[in-house]
Length: 185
Image 1 (cartoon, helix red, strand yellow):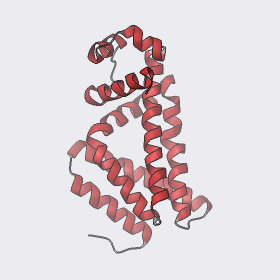
Image 2 (cartoon, rainbow, N blue to C red; image 1 turned 120 degrees about the vertical axis):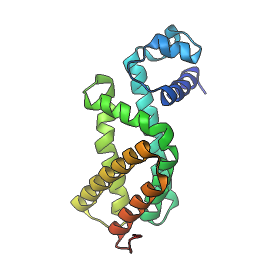
Image 3 (cartoon, helix red, strand yellow; image 1 turned 60 degrees about the vertical axis):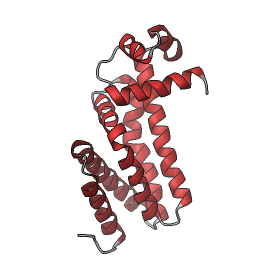
């Protein structure tokens, strides 16, 4: 692992534990036990560092979904497994996700890749899931958008309440509605 990647992993862990907010490079460096000059050396600026964090998180989540789609014959099973992954890490990553999403909504330049990924990247990935399930064209994209909105809402609820059982039941019920299976209540 490169020194830059090691530092990025440590930064991500620090942000998960402390949030992003208006954290300065000096504050972050002190929290990591390094110097702000090392952060500048590896990332150039605070904004570029935040962009690297976003890129790493998005790359990882998409890879998880792609792996599940390769491993599962049933797209609904892949979707439920992905929800399980998201829910398992919600306590750690949901606050960071929503904080960085807020930064993207405010039009922060460093968050431009996140703005694109938050919509188009996930619509593309989820659309593939629905195409594998037999939906065609616009129907796959519309269903992907609906699924994305539902998942973010349930993730937000889970992050606020910590009620995993209710969140899991909501996702299972939504999946049952989409697949025509009997709902679970």
